[in-house]
Amino acid sequence: MSELLPLIDSFGRLHNNLRISVTDRCNIRCFYCMPAENVEFMDKQELLTFEEIERFVRVVVPLGINKLRLTGGEPLVRRDLDQLVSRLAAIPGIEDIGLTTNGILLAEQAEALHAAGLRRINVSLDALTPGKFKQFTRRDGFEKVIEGIKAAQRVGFDPVKVNAVSVRGLTEEEIVPFGDFARNTGVEVRFIEYMPLDADNAWEREKVLFAHEIIERLSAEIMPLIPEGNQEPHAPATDFVFEDGIGRIGFIASISQPFCMSCNRIRITADGKLRNCLFSLEETDLRLLLRRTGSDAEIAAAVRASVAAKKEGHEINTARFIQPERPMYSIGG
Ligand code: SAM
Ligand code: SF4
Image 1 (cartoon, helix red, strand yellow):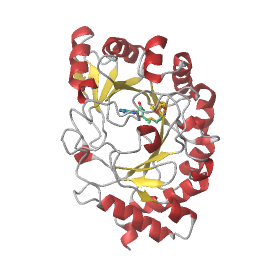
Image 2 (image 1 turned 180 degrees about the vertical axis):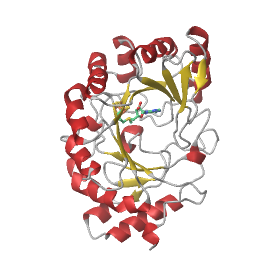
Image 3 (image 1 turned 45 degrees about the vertical axis):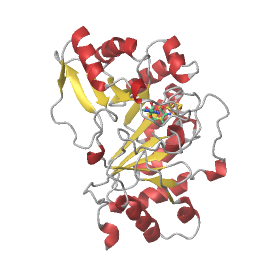
């Protein structure tokens, strides 16, 4: 009976959203996420198989999980990802499956992913010129990402969103081009404040370009941004539209306006560790349960215990903050 109670933590937050990392590998090297060189990736046998991921999702659906997002590392480097999407889309109770990708391999996979049942795509793109793209990613590939975004729109993904990490000293000159991009393409651009999850441990508060600064700049240089009505209460992004109704811009202001009290997410890493927060310092090893003797009831109990132990918030803005050992690419953003 207790398996059927929803996943509510000690602060009354209901969890219905699971982010699944399918790999820690990536084909680029964004400075705010990965080290430049000598990345130590997980061994293949450490990764949850598609069967194990599917079983896990089937166990958590009765606990109230109905939204999934596939992420990584770069999820499109995991072979046959469309087959995982098909398996997950077929699970009764799953209402929504999204994918966050850097877009490099999207043009070649968009059609198969759409056919498999994926409908929502977020493409990460921090700049609108090849040179600035390389400053963020330490790799070439800007044109491929643009091709990927066009392919996603062409095959019918709706919405297609672009995520841009906002970094002081780099993002300023991208703000107006991104505003124009949103207006010209119909893609919603979402600025994400740079968070302390980089492998190089180089994050400082001074390096974050805050949402309000971007709003002021867009409003002054393009036209006023108006907050959208009917925002989904658990969405981390606050969405705006330009005054004339053309062009949507969102902000994930994790640093300047933390949204921890409305968080509804849990995450499983590619090697099967359950995390109740991006910034948590503890994890629950579910791979052991999934791979060995764990019954569905034991797995469900472990998920429930992890949610029950969730902390109130991330504490980035306090002296108590400790950056997690895992950088973003190995957690799954
Ligand atoms: N590789 C895929 C991608 O880049 O879209 C999926 C994984 S990536 C870790 C997920 C998201 O996290 C991306 O939008 C990325 O920009 C964002 N991200 C990574 N490190 C970040 C950081 N330190 N602060 C804010 N966002 C970050
Ligand atoms: Fe790769 Fe995504 Fe991390 Fe960039 S943010 S290095 S694309 S995993």
